[in-house]
Image (spheres, rainbow, N blue to C red):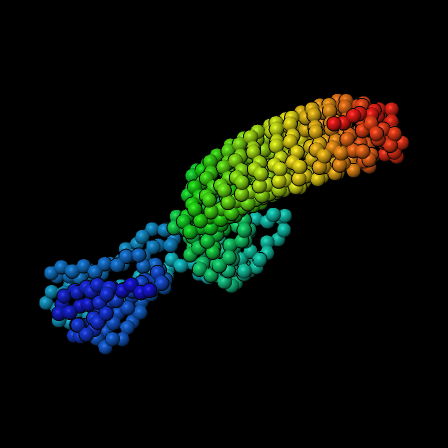
Length: 527
């Protein structure tokens, strides 16, 4: 949709017309010319239309037109235009005036054309050539390139062209390439950049670009946000300039923010607007407060990893999973509210959350991944929801304060090392629905004294109770002796009494797997 304003010079007088005037030429056919401002698809375009109706178009391709005013007095017309200086990020005003008094030979069209030309000329000096990147550094020297493995920099892979030179003159650095710069990779990571100027030819910013540039203050680019802090491609923040910021509000319109805040150690608070569906603030070690909007659909890989200062999180309803290593190493996280919409907690989601002591798992959860709560040393109790069908290897390994477990009836297998190193466990009641106890499931639970194994268990694998030095009573309700792996109780003979169904006493004592423990096996009447 076009939005138009018309301006005409007629008999030395300035005349304006509202946007709905469509027959200007007919009304004022003897006017010298018409200056028409149009908004076409959100872009301002100016046309000068002469008396014959032939337009001359001025889109100001080298700059951005921000304001336009035509004022008249008894003697003058003033034409004022503003463009944004892309280097200083400030508004620069250009104006020309025309005296009309007693003038029969005023060439208004020529004057206005000269204004447009001067703006084009000025703006063109502020444009980064397509084969260059401009920059500033904190020490006023050429930027040093970064390679993760100290390998030779592949400039084609990082910038789309080969580097010719890297110079720093008169307060500004220039990277000169042998072709158009089309993308930016990780070659400038961990540098002392303060400002970076990218040409309009750049269309791709790789994930993790500019990570570790802790002194970076501003991006100057067609891809930059209004405040110059973000590079945004297809509504996703691809890079962030963190220097000096303790609090930041994500720009409106952004829907993704992955891996762009890595190592932003000064950030304490991030305000995320509705509309964001995917986020990550991995490595923001001082982040203490964050609001997750309802529009977020899932919390993916390392979304809050290494956020050491984060103490509580409320996950909004609608999120369906807590991703791999989502809250890894959040040392101060004590409380997490998980909504009923979450169906899975992936591998390592809360690994090394050493102060986490309050988490309620809703009935909607059916999967907990490997090492999901590994080394949550403050977690003292966990009630596994009734819908839970699969718990991964080492899910609660080294939860040294864990004293109480409630198993769901839908669970069939206790996976390997599931409770290994849970030193505070004293009693475990394995329900009748469990069929297999994988290797080292309870290894190192050195205060475990009593275990009841349900009647459906058919296999107890290697080292399940190895290192359980205080285990004194083992009740096994299975009528058919389960298969036994090696060193179930560790080296040597167990120190515990083993109670089995009275009617199966002889079966246990003579079975290949159990007869080595026959001196410790007794019959028991289970209810």
